[in-house]
Length: 98
Image 1 (cartoon, helix red, strand yellow):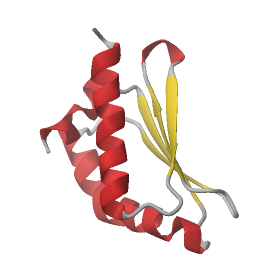
Image 2 (image 1 turned 180 degrees about the vertical axis):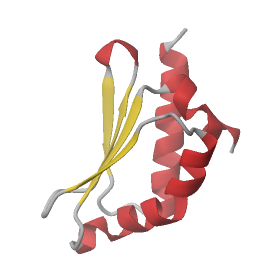
Image 3 (image 1 turned 135 degrees about the vertical axis):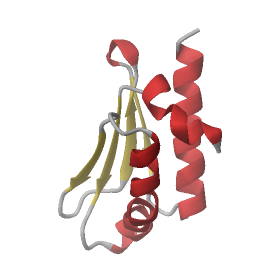
């Protein structure tokens, strides 16, 4: 899981959008509660933005160089699948630099 420390090298910003109360955002909330501290510790100056909005569909957005953004819908995903989606976004950032 060395890729977790490469967020700041491969991305410009990470945004997690979720609802504070909806069942569809429950795994996204759990993911944030369990992983935010570790991700932030490994990437202390990297912006990890948690955006809460009532009724919003849970999403994960990565912003790369030159304003390129990629988003993934998180509804129905497990925490493991969300972690894999984040890993894929980080690896995409590494491939965009080539």
